[in-house]
Amino acid sequence: MDGPPAYPVRASDAARDRVIEELRDRLVEGRMSQNVYEHRVERALRARTEAELEELLHDLPPRSRVVNRLTGLVSSLSAATARVESAWRAPRLPRFMLPSAQQPRVLVGRAPGCHFVLTDLTVSRFHAEIRVSEDGGWIVSDLGSMNGTRLNGWRLTGPVPIRPGDQLGFGDITFIVAAMP
Image (spheres, helix red, strand yellow):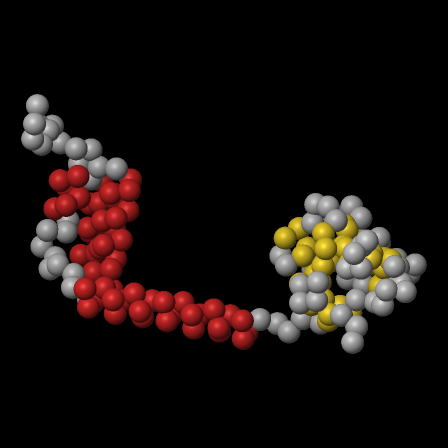
């Protein structure tokens, strides 16, 4: 049996997504109104066959390479400016100065007996420990705190090395790790 099948090909979710993305791009280009776009998206979501999906795109003019390139360039430039803006608006974090190697262990917490006392209620009494490793670097460990210790946004599950420039968080408080000059 050669040739196309006699029965209609069922529309897949990937095909629906492709058609909806194409419709969205055409809306952005100004090739259709918002009402037409919404109507066609509804039809795409209800479509049962590939033919019904293709019918939604048949009257739209073909996309040119120039428009594709220009749209891609504008979207990448937009993404880059959004990243710069979010970095610019990010709060300036306080520094957490790593002690000298003469102090091999630093306890962080709310308790008065800790070396680095934080008064925030999201910090446990004995929250974390920072100690010198065998290679002379520093290692941070969570001491079973309720709100956790985070390094660069990731919650710690075991001892992890830290370096200057890392973001170190205890509960809701976050610091930038810095080395002693």
